Amino acid sequence: MELIKLILRNTGRHRLRTVLTILGMAVAILAFCLLRTVVDAWYAGVAGASPNRLVTRNAVSLVFTLPISYKQKILQVPGVNKVSYANWFAGIYVDEKQFFPRIAVGAENFFDLFPEFIIDPDQLRTFKGQRNACIAGRKLIEKYGWKLGDTIPLTGNIYPGEWRFVLRGVYRGAAKTTDETQFFFRWDYLDESLRKTSPFRSGQAGWYVVQIENPMESQTISQTIDALFKNSSAETLTETEKAFQLGFVAMTDAIVIAIRVVSVVVIGVILMVLANTMAMSARDRMSEYAVLKTLGFGNTFLFVIIAGESVTIALCGGVLGMLLAFPTASVFSRELGTLLPIFHISGTTLFLGSAVTVGIGLLSALFPAWRATRVRIAEALRHIG
Amino acid sequence: MSEVPSQQPVVVVDRVSKSYRRGAQLIHVLKEINLTIEEGSFVALMGPSGSGKSTLLNLIAGIDRPDAGSLVVAGTDITQLDESELAAWRTRHVGFIFQFYNLLPVLTGLENVELPLLLSGLSRRQRREHAMVALELVGLSHRIHHYPRELSGGEQQRVAIARAIVTDPTLLVADEPTGDLDKASATEVLGLMDQLNRDFGKTIIMVTHDPHAAAKAGVTRHLDKGVLNNSSD
Image 1 (spheres, each protein chain N blue to C red):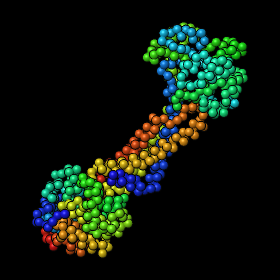
Image 2: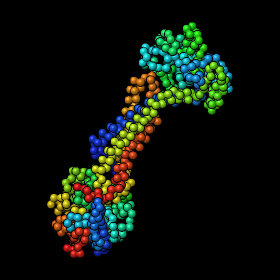
Image 3: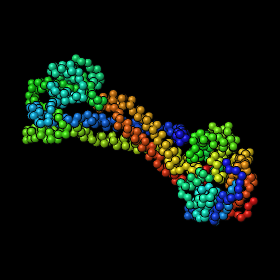
Image 4: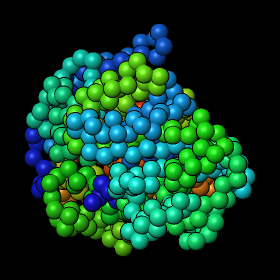
């Protein structure tokens, strides 16, 4: 108890210095949490991937499509439960800044493969019964103020023309990490139009989503599917949904690395700031350490009071930074909107923030504590006064 | 606290030498010092600046180590102890009174006095009681919750004396205890030390420049250029 009292009172000795260091620490931990959250948001698709889903795409590139006839063949592969398909539509809503994923999906069973998208059964039934129907995520309809029955106009770019969809359903995510900013409409509506305008582009799926019985067999099933279409005009590449998502992230790897480097630099800077504060405090108190040693207190006691002060300052700043991270992340989430749809402070980020906070506190204490333990009593006392 | 003094040697300094290196120069601060101090005595060490009196005090108190010779204090040859043993020995046997009081500024008078007892294994309540007794003895029971900055120099030194005696050590060492005090406070502090020696039989070794302070001690030894004069006053 006396030890804690001594640590806390020492912490409050130079109020301005302590407050400024705490604020610096808070800003650093806030930045660390936000940068980590950006990286998490980048990997949200990977984290949300299901182990029992495979994705089959054109082996050359995702840009190239696959014949819709592949669906039945894939379905014949042992271990495959269900197969659905989708096309990346892109398009423009209002203007090019309004980004959200717009995807044409096989209406009959696409949502059966994605149980994380929770949809009212009546709305899903209506979606399946109306060719130009669409389903949007909860966050998306909140952002644009859409209501069921509204007509959503899109201007096609990959698939030119003016497209009009009627909002018939809203999905919400089963978990916090489920992306609620996607826009789905029926693939057959797209295909019907293509048959009239660009017949050579009709009957094509962008990729297949394959639900398998046993995730342990994903490699074998992937190889079997790809073998089916070997030497065809459209060879396939089948991989787990996680690997498929990681492929997207890999394209922007440099940005993720840069963000990670910045977060490490931020931590390094605040480590030096706190270490400097602690070094100054310890230098001011060298004679007190000498007195404590004179009275019989050992090096462990000195380390504990110095590290205790350092960790206290770090914790005050760290906790403040982590508390500030929540409202700041909300603002970021609102502003980033559909660009990084899953933007929330995770438990892992908080754990890492806490670990970094304590780590900084302890590391900052090392040098001053080492100096304090090395102090020669007679020498330090000679300088008093 | 201890009772009436017996005439057992509590400090035996045997051919102790100490030197410091200042740059390339080796300074011999103490040269083969021999000194015996009886239990219950009040000894003043005097001498000009740089004569080695504070160094000798530090060696006896176990906060510095000699280059040669032996130091038997309170029955232990302290030159044979390692750092942690020496620290534990100091806690048990030595009470320190410094020129500049050296109280911890973040602790109240009571907490400062209680500080050495944290190493004693006493309960919080027992520590408080011991500290209160020591503070009453130095006449400061009414200032226990004041911080050092709220106390005068004389009061701070009395708190320091209470801290020095609270563990009931074998030996009290004081390095210029009145050097930073006005005359009235110095008289009070010396009176207190005299009382500790006379009434409680405390062995006190005091380094001082001040002949008036030295006059309070029963024995005065003079050091000059690292050599202890054989004569004592």
